Image (cartoon, rainbow, N blue to C red; front, side, top):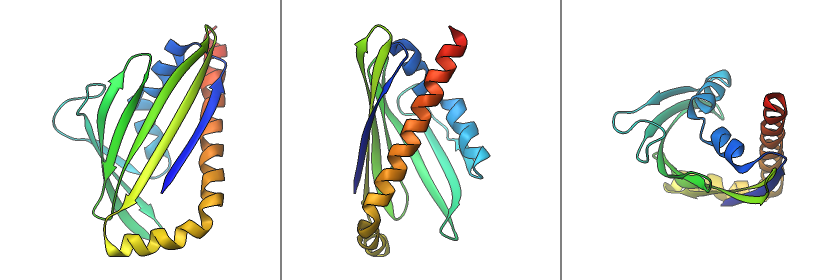
Amino acid sequence: MEFRTREDIEAPLDHVFREISDFPAFERAIMRRGGDITVLDGPVPPDPGARWEVRFRFRGKDRRIVATLKKLEPGQGLSITFESPNIKGNCQVDLVPLSPSRTRLNIVVAVKPVSIAAKLVAQSLRFGKHRMTRRFKTMVATYAEDVETRHRARA
C-alpha cells in the first residue's frame, strides 16, 4: 500500500530541509502522542544508518517498529526505512526548489505486510484507503503549514 502527497511551502529550501531533518523535534512529537522512542546504538542522527526503536499502542495492541535513516542529502531530502515483525516499509521525502522562497515537499510512504495476519489486515484496509489517504494528506498539509509559520516567525 502506498501513500503519496505533495505540498508547496512558502519557505526557502534550506529552511524546509532543516525542518525535515530536525530529528529531536520528531522524537518529541512521538512522545507527545503517547509513543516511546529510543535511539539505538550505531550512527547518531543525522548520519545515515541512524536507527530508532519506536513503541506505541495501535488498535489496542502494543507495537514496535525499528526505523533506519537510509539517506540524508542536504537540499534534496531523506529516506527512512521501517520494519516490524508484521510490516516493512519506507518513507521517501524529496524537496524541489520552486523559487528562492518556495519549496515543494514530496512524500511517498510505502507499506508492505510481511506476516499472514498483516496481509489480512492490509486487505481489509484497502477498502478504507481513500479515507486513510485523505488523513495522510491532511497530516502533511498541517505539517507544511507549521513549517511556513515557523519560517515567518524567524523572518
